[in-house]
Length: 89
Image 1 (cartoon, helix red, strand yellow):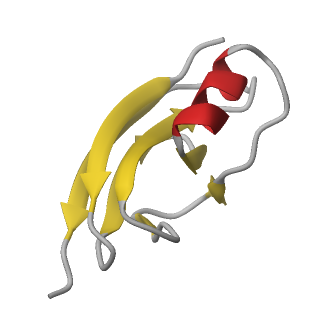
Image 2 (cartoon, helix red, strand yellow; image 1 turned 180 degrees about the vertical axis):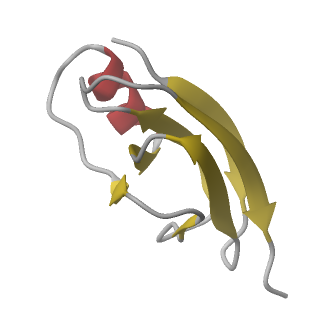
């Protein structure tokens, strides 16, 4: 399974901005347990989805340690991503 992986610390009002270059891609925001399930091929829950336009903006339901995963869903092509934490104060 090929994917890009980033780890971020998010506050309660923060969001994640993912700038994609290349193909359209799946952008997933996962907590720790769901990221482990993702890695092991088990069922997982996430925030995000398939994005054909950039940037993808993801807002978590709560503060904490989060994983951002970018993949092509098994499709052909290539993608690169820049991940930024955006704070709303």
